[in-house]
Length: 364
Image (cartoon, rainbow, N blue to C red; front, side, top):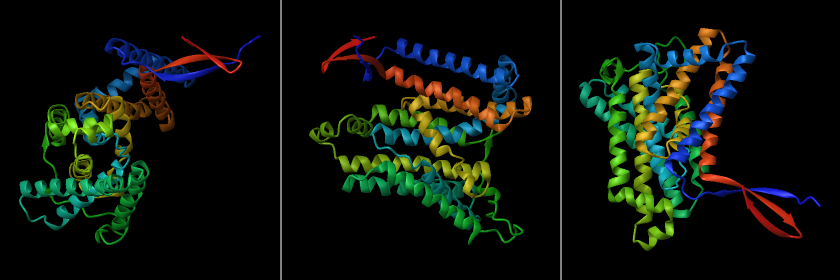
């Protein structure tokens, strides 16, 4: 008699760093093999395509700068989202917080352009972080006060923020000199972030924040309290931690960092405010934060690699004359395997035989 078998996924005990690294490397190898099969269907040489992707991301000073420009918002947004995730507050509202940060910074830039550049930029940074933090604070307050589902609230608030920017762009903030196009006036020169080594100084801010957030989460009392709440809210309560206050402080910081990204993108990249200011970074940062296991130094590395993947994917479209969809499929295959490896790092499959309502477990 053949006994039916069911498959269950159970959580592993904490795997060793060597074993986790082996799983992740194996996933990358499988991703490259699978991508190669797809590339062969396009009548291309997989090795040439991979070499061109690397060249597209780092093959010249210009391309390396473009990769860094794409990595900057990913790094800072991932740090912000990572703080919330560390506390198991699922902040899916990075897009909205970036948009509101860009809105506040742009308001300052467009209305106070007579200020000196250092003062104006500092005010823009403050306004952007404040707006992003307050936008994140709304769902955090609801969560702390009434236990609402922060995933839904933060997600829905993204659409409110983006529609608000669209309203401004098509309505009251439209530049009269734009010849009827829905465009907001460009910033004055003193509202634009200066450059260092050919890239706006957002990269300096990002590096500083990586160090600062690492110290904050790992070597301060508040960082410890955030971690405890993430592990067990009951333990935090028994330890005498002010749970509501810690949640609000952490989310204010999380949203503030996302708001800072809005300021950087509006000032350093777009030089104006538009509905495209977020560029999908708020959602992409969720992936990079998880891939980095919420570790600030690893977030820096993962964000650069992800930016390189995007930049390299764009380059091969021109180099080989393939459509954008084909390049995105390649990116998707690689991400699928890399993200999937995280499951096998933390879980294993158990095969269970069923016979007369008795389960006999056999761990493979």
